[in-house]
Length: 106
Image 1 (cartoon, rainbow, N blue to C red):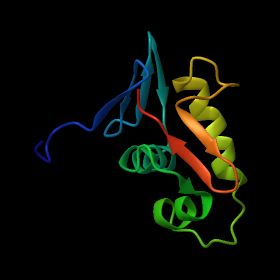
Image 2: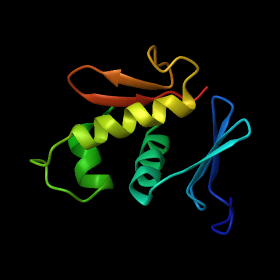
Image 3: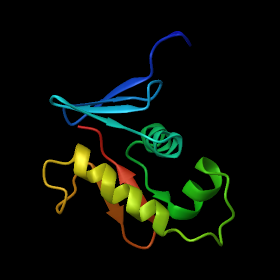
Image 4: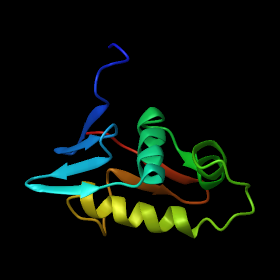
């Protein structure tokens, strides 16, 4: 894969286009913020592995660990609305109790 290739990923039949900050599901296109796109990319890069809220804050958003982590939780809820078939029973963006989250690409 060359560096000029578009960074597009398929998750559960939805397309995430990191270069254009878009998530496409069916005929709906959702705009992502830069922070949201960075979080998705981080989850993709660590696909199948649990990532902690602290590592998301520090590695993705460059924030100190004493920052409120609810921003992450709120974004995860939003992300689930787009990539999960049943957002209340997440299988793609899974909560790992006491740790953080894990992305399961199907």
